[in-house]
Length: 113
Image (cartoon, rainbow, N blue to C red; front, side, top):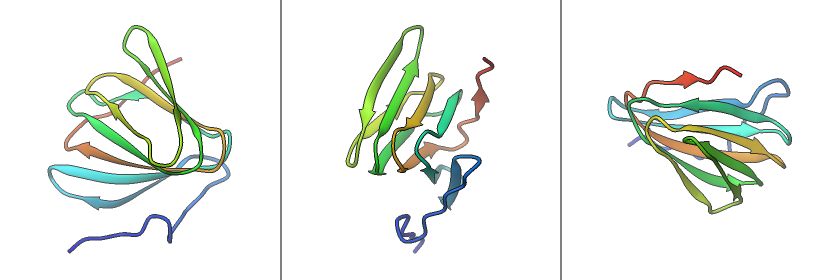
């Protein structure tokens, strides 16, 4: 059995949002992002798969852009969907811990500008 406790092994970085992969198979990946206040996971999208984010601790804002920007507040217990091929980003207001599950292979494309 594969398992992890993402809150017992927190890893933050002063320079970048820290991404830790705890479980990964050929079909799904689970990663956890550790944000310091003010850090941002910039706009990106996954051309081949959906992604679900689960907020564990802290607050922030989740934004999608599929021709029109839409934002929602992040807080513990909130779950949001990043649909396949839709731009999305996360900005932390406080220290923020967010886990994700992503279909594999999802691909990844960063947005310029």
